[in-house]
Length: 115
Image (cartoon, rainbow, N blue to C red; front, side, top):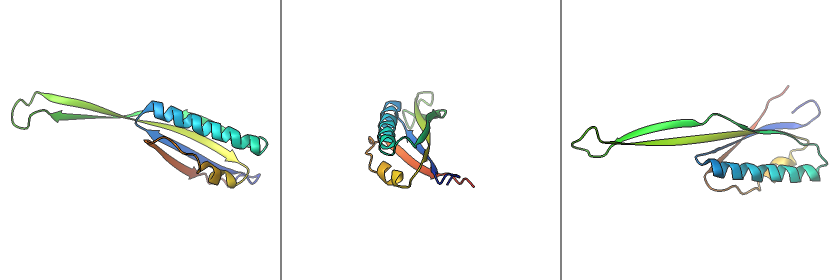
């Protein structure tokens, strides 16, 4: 909790597809704006902050017995976006949990310890 009694938390969105992540961040921003209008503009949102993309590379042999030089190469990209939010009441967290995000998006909520 901050000095004013506000609650500060961080929402982290992770996905393999950047388009799905963009859609889910728009849904989250839209819902936060709606809640901000209900509670008369007391919400402070910082984000989305885009973190660097994590890339993992894999190489597989095409044939198990011969032709070692023939390999297939794959890449997986993991996108992460962060929202820092300060809200006046704990009700926000329950209201935010009602949002339905597209499949393939991993959502994590972290509460900040501010003394």
